[in-house]
Image (cartoon, rainbow, N blue to C red; front, side, top):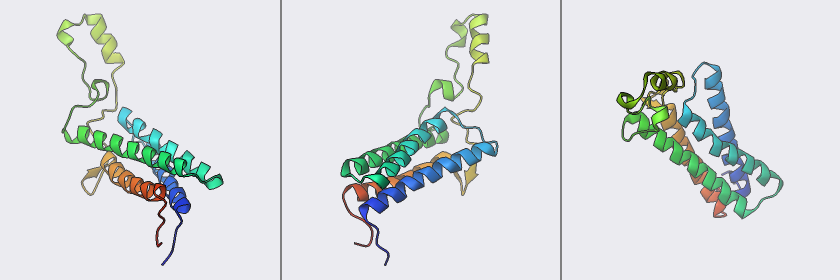
Length: 160
């Protein structure tokens, strides 16, 4: 059985986050425009990837815990986004097409709001695989990465 130290596991988890970022950019290159919540989910993955790069040079338990927090935030944001997509809860007004109380707006205010309205809606997924949206897959994979980071943070590798 292959063994991985907690340091190696943390670096692998960070590489997973880097891979997820690259996949998101690839989908964007293919023409799938990200919404506001999609962009929000990328930041914790970027942080986790950077933390893993730092661990490659200097391993510290604090860094592994920071990586776990970053991956956990990515998972939380992805769960929130998935819930918005499934209609379990309301997303941000600017991201779900809400214009507010249009009856109380002047024509000029309404036109200005329409011109700045979000084009890519957070509650309408553009891509599905096996019945799950990209945000839902991000939640699943981020949960796995969070587990890897937590195992590394507790000082437990794999196969030990």
